[in-house]
Amino acid sequence: MKLSKKTLSKLKNKNKKLKPNQYKKLKRQSLRGNIKGTVERPRLSVYRSNEHIYAQIIDDTNSKTLLSCSTLDRSIQLNLVTGRTCDSARLMGEKLAQLSLKKNITKIVFDRGPYLYHGRVKALADGTRAGGLQF
Image 1 (cartoon, rainbow, N blue to C red):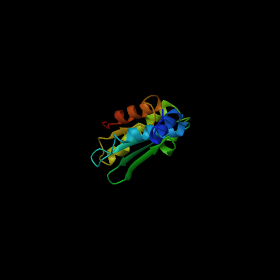
Image 2 (image 1 turned 45 degrees about the vertical axis):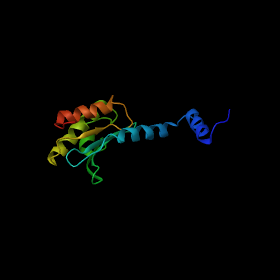
Image 3 (image 1 turned 90 degrees about the vertical axis):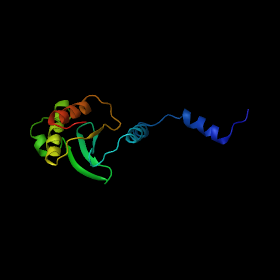
Image 4 (image 1 turned 60 degrees about the horizontal axis):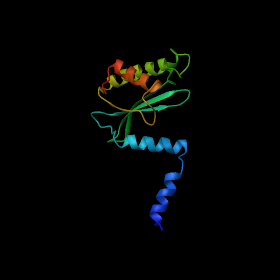
């Protein structure tokens, strides 16, 4: 049985395991295809590292970051012992909501990236909702 080059390459790629970083990129790109930020509803993008959590409010039509906030900010660090807890993520979400309401941003689209909606990411989302933003 003779297979074409196209079929062989598909089988070859199917059997390869993805490295974790490649898997994260694919997951992020598949989600990002569905989520776009506009002027009326900008996108809240989340990045989570082992130590801290970062969030940005982005307008994709103009490709501009409107706001950013992280657990490294001075006003947030004064109230926390460490940046890797759900309490710190919730506090950061509330601070981000305050800043966005000052800039008249009330509705956003939540982009969790490659992360599960669980733990610190969920706490950040709950904090922004408690602060007055609507998803």
